[in-house]
Length: 551
Image (cartoon, rainbow, N blue to C red; front, top):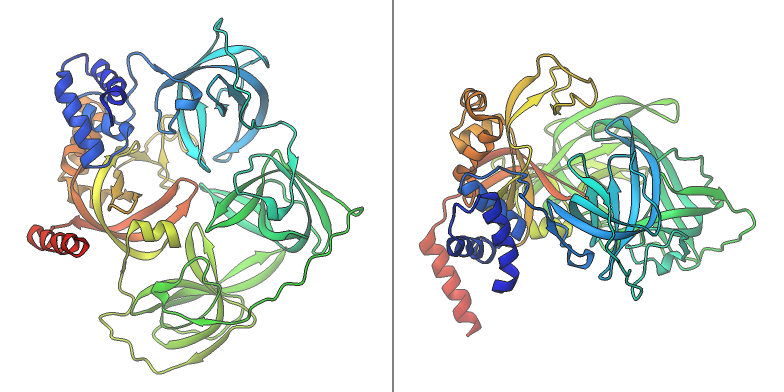
């Protein structure tokens, strides 16, 4: 980064630290964090402020930075925006099991346009008027920057004249109608007329709250795509044509997915006839190792040893059914399987599963034994020391191919996130709770204290969030729960994470656990962790050989 780009960040750090640290020293540290450790500017600022004893984790600057919309990166924690309101809509959403009022706004200035969510649903905004939105934070979704205004933010009417840019596509309140084959995966508001090829209703759990959704496949003359109805799914008839209005799309594994949320509507379109083109469906099945299975592997044949097997009763469309599930592993990895038919699978036996199909849940591939599946017992030739061992992968590989069970990663800790340190848990459900209480059980008189770390780990191919429990946190930081409680009483709860930071930041670690993927990227629930000792001589020799090979 050039000095002109660095200066605003350095001035922000100096304000937070009350000018206690020399500017030249801060510049050197900032360059080290961003150029050597490849941290984002926001992560670098948090790390430097923690190092010099400033406010921990989610710091707030003395004077918020004012930015143009076109300059937003998606990593801002405290930024003011002066912009004109293009659209404003009050609505209600379900947040962690409770109804919450918000204001959805679309704003613009002379550099760009973006969406803004005001989490105080009482804000009254006039279309065409200019406001200063104070204390916003931003994030990226589908490569678009989104602004949020929380409890610490404020809205003030502004006399500043703002000319909204006109040479870029806006988020039109009247959605455009598109064919499925023309979808890009970035549409925020689109109408689609399509025939239902396949549909099923599911009961899922989102952030601890049960939810009923519909998902399946819809198609038109230009192609087909998967869809999900997230709110109040209607009864959809296979083979019927519907108008799906107010959809938004995203891409997953280079395939477009269609989503219908609270603002979407679905109406039957019996007046429209859609003839789907004939498609050649491949029934070929590839024989594959479990460790090589990806989200888009399709139909597969695998051979492995049954590690666990169980059956449980579920209710599907009001009817009781039995689902059979467990873990199957070979010498490259393990995967969860499920089946609606009883194949008599028993722990310890080795089977060949033919014509199974792969379906993912939260980015973790699962092996599904459908009606066309064949299962036969085979001789066990696996080495007991290798069966079901953890699969070592890079983060780049996970981002490309999806998550999985029992994965091992090596990387450097580049950030310690909000929610780390001393936390409180609900004594009923064990969820972490804030001052507002448990999202499911309300205020608790005697919450259970606990330790946790939420880290960003980078291995050079990408970064991943790693969540560590009390035992692992104590092991890596030498800070026990008792020490954390005493420190919190003496100096405040935020000091626990402050004490943890120098013990873990910029350290190489080896972690193991299950990796899931959602809209916020990959997350590992860590089951094992240890410092990763690097053989510097061996690494230097390897690097030298790579360099010599390119000369």
